[in-house]
Image (cartoon, rainbow, N blue to C red):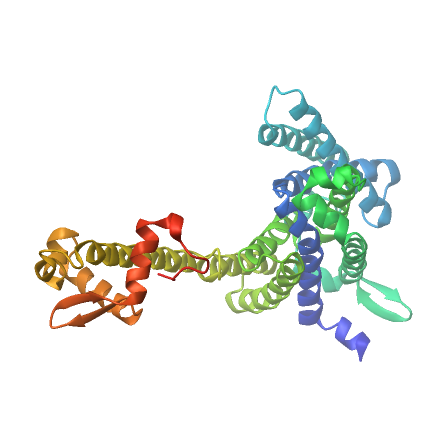
Length: 383
């Protein structure tokens, strides 16, 4: 049954996409938190240089040696970027823009000169084709399985083991690198280990989604998860779930519309980012707008009770503390006056008696709190 499932074409495609997404999200979470996610873009391009160099030296177009060689190229890319940035002649983003096009260009030229007829052409490396992963299979314990599915399973397991064993150290490095260094956690070494695994994952994934679309799987699911939660473990979990759902939905939509499967999977991750951006409970646009409206309503209620308090018990109270007077004195439109009075009454701050606005003890206390904040009691009245 397992062998039949592994050779099922839709399952092998969706499972490979899901594993790419999970492996990428595990590492991408920390890169996003460290604001180093664009290093993924640099690495995903520069590994072309490493792939062709390894092929020229060993003649192997895939396998562990190829993954290790390309992973070392990713580390070389980061080292060159840091060396350029430390000269203070260029900023970090400019250094990224200088290094990876140079390595990518050399890699493309070497491919054109020495590997024209080899499987590792630039189109394969950059774009991949997840729809064909079921064609390349290997035997494992007498069971035939797609090679990409097996390699991504191994990479995902390695990434999960890395994050699980070094979770505390990675968490401290992401949020307070100085403290991590003071506690002896060697954040620089951890950072390079993280980027080495990112490079290895990119190489393992280029048969499926390509190095370019791999960037989307590294950055987008963790970014969407970041808009939903502040907890690190939840961010990792949500990013992985988004990657799995996007892989499944992306496959069926790509089949329905007869378009690139890898591209549709990456686009589905973008749809989740858009949903998180709109409906995220804390950082979503709708939540922020709702919070802004509540703050403005609170300010308006405070202005109302202070206005009533200033005229309470004084000559002219009968004329000033009326609904009609608010439009002129507070420069509020009639609709706004009606809304604020209704909200203040619901909050127990005022009572409306025959168009006359009277403060309650709660409203009087809030007015004193605004006018004399130095006498504010603990657990002051909510607005």
